[in-house]
Image (tube, rainbow, N blue to C red):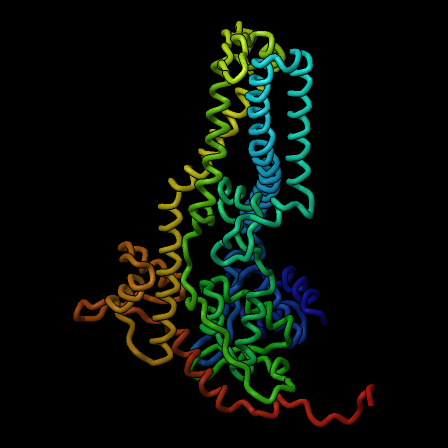
Amino acid sequence: MEPREAAKVLEGSLKNPRAPVTIADAAAESGLALRDAERGLNWLTSTYRGHLRVTEEGQLLFLYPYGFTRPWETRDRVRDAFRALGRLLGGAARFVVRAWMMIIIFAYAGSFLAILIGFLFAGQGGSSSRQGSGTLAYVFFRVLADALFWTFHPFSPVAIRGSSTAEAGTDKVPFYEKVNRFVFGPTPPRDEPLLMERRILAEIRAQRGRIGLGDVMRVTGLPREEADPMMARLMLDYDGDVDVSEGGGITYRFEALRKTVLETREPRPAPAWSERKRVPPVTGNSTGSNVAIGLLNGFNLAMGSVALGTNLTLHRIANLYEMVRSRPHYAGHYHAPVVHSIPYDGIPIAFGLLPIVFSLALFLMPVGRVLLQRFRARAVARENGRLGLLREILTRVNARAPLTEPALEKAWTDAAGEAPAPKQLTRCVVDLGGDVQIEESGEVRYRFVDLEAEAEALEEERAAAAQTEAQVGRVVFGSDE
């Protein structure tokens, strides 16, 4: 029987899933064979985040603290929905900002430059006001079109040449990507959905097909409540079995995963704490890039303020030339034009409000991230401290050394850079499956009975694992021969 089908039978048969149940109990209540009952219980453990317990006689117990319900699904769905919405809005915002910044850099700068040039031509009497306004409109829309074209064209020199110098860790960063970083921060790396599973499989093959929850926590950094159901799922996917030692240690055996044609033994994957978590930078750009983008945005903000203060509406742009008077122009002499004040004609939106609002927003977003850096740093420090604590626990458990409170506090402080909060250490120890014990002398010690029994059982299991399990045998037929 398939594990999923056996699990459905057990869901309708087990009366109180929150109470511990043996494989024999499940078989008796459901009428399933022992093998099918075991596979069904493993499926339920994976699906409903169940737990395994071992009695002093070596009996394996299954229990499901949430019953046959998944209350975390609503929370996970809401979280995933918000993440998806955030990615959607972030992508749309990045697209808008990318286009807008190119418009700022090219169109607005070109437009203001065209206005100034038009002033000079009008002041020198080189063209009529109608010709001047037509030239200004042509320059504006031409620069706008060029800005959009060179922003999204695949062979755009702006897109393939960010700067003459390479950014740290990159070869050549496109200019629009630097703008995105300036506004939204560096783009986080994409998650590889099977990366964690590949690391666990590599650990299984490196450890002679025998691992425990401690090995899973070592390579993934997950707490025990998440590592336990993950192992139940891996047993179903990769034909694994669970064994219980005389000392009560739970081990997982995957003989089928040992088959290999490699002559050398595969190395163990690096532990989760081998690379410290770091606070992402505010922009990820060089100082020069940030200054350049800031100056461009500041120029746009300043010119928008000037346009707002001088009533530079679209209707009044053409009238600029009519209101310019120049002094007589004599050979060899130039007299600056005199500009009269422009009557009020409404709020300038295109050259006033839009540049000001968007420029302020583009400045406020990185400033907000700077203010949030302190909270991000605390979260990263907590995660580094937890991983440092996990490293100390697994190292001392494997070495059969006592786990004292000063040792764990030092491990946390060395990894996080700061001492843990009073209850933080105990809470993390409990999440990793530990118990707090107070000695008669008053000294606080932590025990991980399950991990200690598991380490002892794994040592015996790996020593007894036959090398023939990994051999594939001699090739007797090949389609290429």
